[in-house]
Length: 533
Image (cartoon, rainbow, N blue to C red; front, side, top):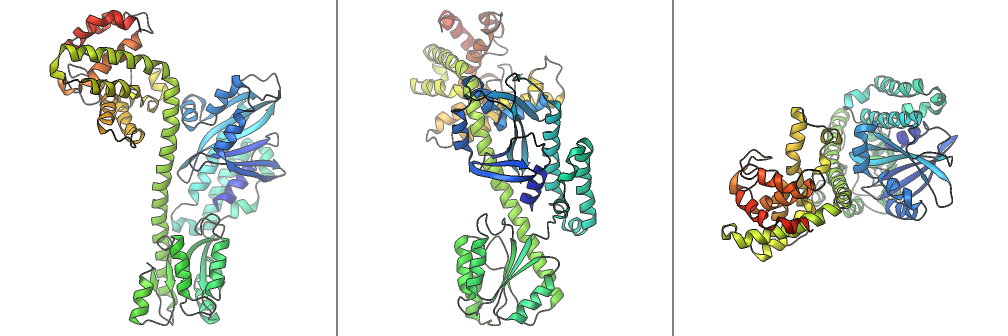
């Protein structure tokens, strides 16, 4: 259903668009489409291979911006000021100019990058902002999200097809009012797609009467597929296994299965479903007349949903099975949501870390040197902090993650000069906590728990002040981990060196308020060495 809607919506784009790309970063897939009176799916390939291939074709001066234009974190960052989309022109080594307009869209809880590509003339400026195309991609993305949402509504709402059709019509009308030339792109096929019409019940029984009875119960509500033996059922399921039974064009939501059949019996089908790991994802209803204790025990060992007894009570079966289908659907949706969010989180954090390391490379190298220098001096000056050479080595390495939560704060907040709202202050004060949580993922494979704890302490607590006025936890004195106290001075020094303010004066001035006076004393003894880094 959603693939059909997606393809129909793609017909919205102008014929001047050369290619349409949907980049599924989580699953490392890129779908390429072309519009020639109808939408043509040109290719499906590995996203990583595509980007590697493009990196050898794009002019080196445009390569970084090209990669940013397909980066979910970068696009999300730009969306604050650019209305959710990003447009830029780039040049290939063969001299041809292209313009890409990109946005992040959410499909089934998975963030994907949607890109419209068009040829541009050689005079196109990289900063050109084509309002018409930028507006179009925003409308397309919004329409796709709305149409996706409408087919995930309550079953009672979906049952009223006229209401659903009117809502979908209103979405499409909003687009065609802005772009009248697109009206002919919409067909009744797109509007008539129903969440129920794609749902399929598979009836597997060699008894035609039984198949007919079950078919009559659900006909008009579900698509019905019949198989006369286990072999036919397995062959049908295999044909629909390219995307998984429950995601294929014939969206299997339940199976009625007889046990005693020619060619292959019901237990062969159960074995097949068990091997595919789907028995806990869709209800299988056994319809055999053999209810011996041994048979029941064997059947229920497969984790089937229920066993029905002939003859059937039509209304009981209808309500019973619909309840099963809805129950399994809800469970699958929750499982898929958790899985998608986990995969999406992994992808976002991976991209996020790479971006952080590029942007902070120069800073983290200097801060690491400042931290090592100051930590060694503090170790020599004060036994009370229990610093050792081994711990200092860990602090030196771990400080590189000090600002890893920076990208979680909206740029609109960071660019303000004070006068923050309460909500904006909450963003700022909580991002060190976010940093610490990110490190649980980043360092989850390390066997050095001490290193991980030091890294988390630094990024979470270097904003704490010695007098208790910092954030996020208002820690004071030596309740602030020593590694965070040392890192705070190293970070402040590095940041102030980029300004006209004397970092030495600032650190001395903040002794006893922002910084531990003892650590400031150690710093003063080696400040000349700081200036040489």
